[in-house]
Amino acid sequence: MTNTSRKRSNRKADLVRLLQADDARLIDDLAASTAVSSSTLRRELRDLVADGVVRINVGRVSLATPFKEYPFVIRTVFNTEEKIRIARAALDLVQNGDTIFLAGGTTTLEFAKLLPGRRRLTVITNVLRVVNTLVDKAGIELIVLGGAVRPGEHTLHGHLTEWGVNQFRADKFIYGIEAISLQHGLTHSQLLEVNTDRALADASTQVIVLADHTKFGKVAPVMVLPIEKVNILVTGRELPDSEAEGLRAKNIRVILA
Image (cartoon, rainbow, N blue to C red; front, side, top):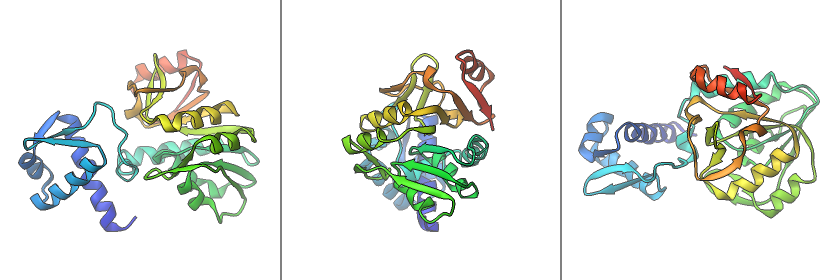
């Protein structure tokens, strides 16, 4: 990502944070809060409206839906330091010689960036960003699952992907998820991804979830996996003690990074 693209993503992320804190804001108020020009603000808002993230009604800006998966480039600037800590802690769970499924997400991509130090790994993935990260790295046998590309996320899905998953068995499934609830389990806002994620979990000996603390206590529209399907959960030390204890009560190993 270029510096210009990074700055634009940061501006958009700041706008989303402001709207998460305040249900609706006047455009002029947002301009004052973000210290950007009105023309720049309106350009970023146009992009967010086009992506379905926000809506504008009579000069007031609000999030489009109560639960929305934000575009990948915006999510990369949310809780970055925590995600890197989580990725580093998760690396200790991977042994030389392991076969791992690696799914999409900003935290799992941080994890992928750390893998080249390991040897004799087999990485099976449906994520094009992971492919670009690992394609020329020594010591890693990289297997790419086919399928239809989801624009923006650069992930592959569909019956070809699921057929491919069923040809393999993995020691570990490294998984990032949109929402985690003790009662409702792992949920997602994108129906397209659910069958792929379930297939990856079913073909793995261990399900290892990487999620920053903001994913907890939330419920997205689509059920992916029951919470009991998770073996290990790696998150930030920002997670409230009550959430961690609730997870441990479900026999999930919780690692706080």
